[in-house]
Length: 87
Image (cartoon, rainbow, N blue to C red; front, side, top):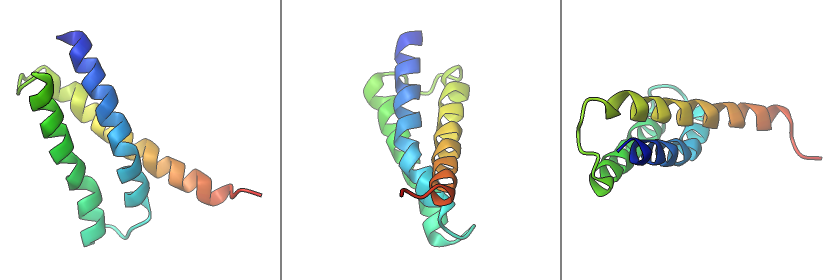
């Protein structure tokens, strides 16, 4: 189960990268911002069900952490790319 949990956590992180990138370009608490935060939740729920992890309490910290890190890294990537444009 642990291997499956880390694999799903890695997928959750990668799925959240573009949503974090998108979120960083929107005004806070607007409809696009809310969508950028909440649309990936449906993917996480689907991954939980498809992987067989279910709703065990031990899975929440790993998946919530992966979700937040994906959003954070995506937002940082947007800021970094806006400050370092291509030549």
